[in-house]
Each structure stands twice: as structure tokens, then as C-alpha cells.
Length: 350
Image 1 (spheres, rainbow, N blue to C red):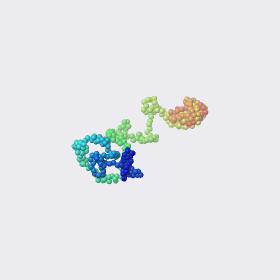
Image 2 (spheres, helix red, strand yellow; image 1 turned 90 degrees about the vertical axis):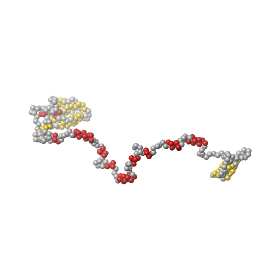
Image 3 (cartoon, helix red, strand yellow; image 1 turned 90 degrees about the horizontal axis):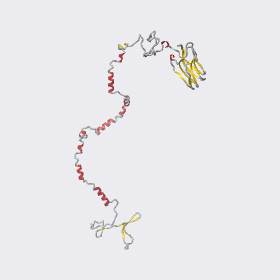
Image 4 (spheres, rainbow, N blue to C red; image 1 turned 135 degrees about the vertical axis):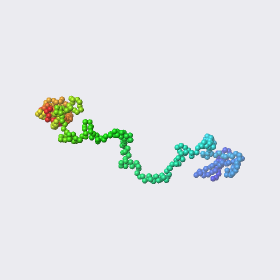
């Protein structure tokens, strides 16, 4: 580094500024030289330990970045002025803590002496426990799912409690006679003794044969039988004389004559009784049943593919019946086919 002078604009005397010249990169840089002088104006070499008295004059130079100034120092002071408690004051505060922390554990609920009396597991005992449980390779929760021990199934059951069992016991304690002995009692109302047989006939389930049945005799002057529990004498059962076997016959129906259509021919001295029927019509027509040529019902109107069903009944309750010796006919208002069947009897004159 060499020294040089930088020329200034002429002020009449040609003064110059002293600089130090050096190369920075490809540039030639001049740095201003500052001298430290004592009070007498003598230049002081800063490299020598020289006592300086009087006023020290230093050429103007910028402070380094971040250096404290009077302003920043004033701000620091404003902050520290609020710290009005000395360390000795802190000690006075802690002097009020007059109970050692070690005694706190002896207070209610935290007695170390009591805890010290417990046999807590140590690292060694915990290691032993771990060694044992490592051998348990099936979760206990799965044991309940083994056959016969499914907790999920058991939990869904409505088990009796001690209270309900006590109620049941109170009820059954009153049953002091075994049910099996009741049938052998000497008297049960108007039925005497154990019913082993009736007139030598052994009771059996189902329909017994005539030989195995106990006969029932009706009074000779009883022409009708009243219902067993009905106090109204006007309500009678069917006459005994007419309760008998009938032969039910079936006849198909297929006719389309506009007027009388014979369905069942007349039987001398017998009535034709309709006990069931199924009839449909191919078109629009009105129809009614006839006792020979006498209407037994009003005309009924039907549209295409309409009809009706008469459900089966007993001959004594027949839907329709002719007079004895007359044919059963179906009357149609037009040439429209009627199809189906009827069920009837023709073996009764009454």
C-alpha cells in the first residue's frame, strides 16, 4: 500500500487531501488518511504507547453498523429503569417460603412415608412379569368365543334375576299337589275317579270305529236337538231326520241360447239343490237361474269375462233348489256363451 495525494478543486492555494492508495480487484482505491494529534497539534503515532493530554482531535469518521448511539443507549436505560428490585429483594421474597419442599410430600394425600411402605414393582420384577405374559399367545378376549362360552351370545339372553326367581318360587310354593296326582283324586266335580274307560271302551284320539265308540241314546220323543249352550229355544239344531249322507254331483256349464238353457235335467220326485258354482260369460249379457221356466233370482248383468263363484255349502243350506221333479235352467238375454260348472244334489225330495 502506498500513499498519494488527491487533487481538489483550486481554492487559490492548491491544497490537497492525503490518501492511501491500494488496488481492489481491477480498481485503484484511495482511502483518506486521519492523524491523531495531541492538544498542541502534534501528530501522535497510535502504534506507540504515548500519553495524550489535552484535547484529542480525530478526523470525522462514520460509526460501524450496529454501534450504540446516544439514542439507543437512552432506550436501554429506559428499559432498565423499570427494574427496581435488586437481587437482595428477590432473596427477601424467597425467605417467606418457610416450609421445605421435602415436607410437602407428608401433607394429606401425598405422604411419601406411606408410599415408601408399599412394595412397588422394580425393573427386575417387571421383567419377570413380562417373561410370563410373553407366553400367553392367545388374547383372553378370544377365550369367550370358544365353543360353549360365547359372551356375545350369552349377553343377548334375558336371564332371570334373583328378584324374578324369588317371585317364581313364591308362586310355585303354593302348588303343593303334583299335577300328576290330580286325575287320581276321589272326586273331581261330577266326574268320579280316574277315567280309564267308559262302559269298557278305552278313549282314543281321532275317529273311533263304530264298534269302539260309546253309543249315545236320544230321547224317543225328541225330533229336534237344541244347541247346547243356547237358552233361546227358537234356535234349533237341524232335524235329526234330515241329517244324512248326500251324493254331491258336478255338471259342466257351456251354453249360449238366448232364453232357456237346461243345465240339469229333472229327476222324478227329487229336488235339484245347487251347493256350489263357478260361472263366467264371454260377452255382455244378463242371466238368472230358473226352476223349469220359473225364475229363482233376479236378472244379473255381466260384462265380457265377468262371472261369479258360489262357495260350497251343505245341501240343507243350498244356494238354489228347484221344486221336486223340475229341471234346473240358466236363462240368458243374448247369444253369449256361459262357461263353468255347478255342484248339486238330486237325491232329496224335501
